[in-house]
Image (spheres, rainbow, N blue to C red):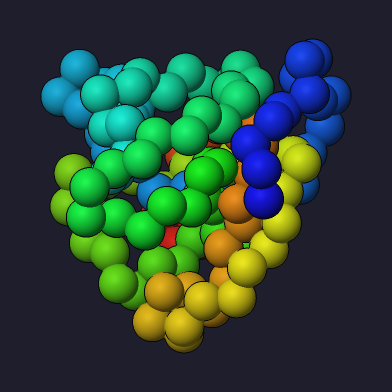
Length: 118
């Protein structure tokens, strides 16, 4: 999927879930790629291509259809409900949650309540 988001943010997207780093300041940031970025809540953010040594190049925002990522720890991290737009779904091994969305746009909505995390 080529990263070329439309020039205007979408109005609505598909509900998804994303595990983000929770900084001591209360701000959110990505787990691995471009992890210095601050992720705002309630704003559409276009995807950027950040090639990172040691990681396979998969441009786009990664999110999941449900709050499930058995291969990742949740220490210092928080599951957030998000919307994704202009995305493709790619199959992943069960240990990685079975499917990922790769999206050109993402908007963080709110934390996922603990009782909803799988």
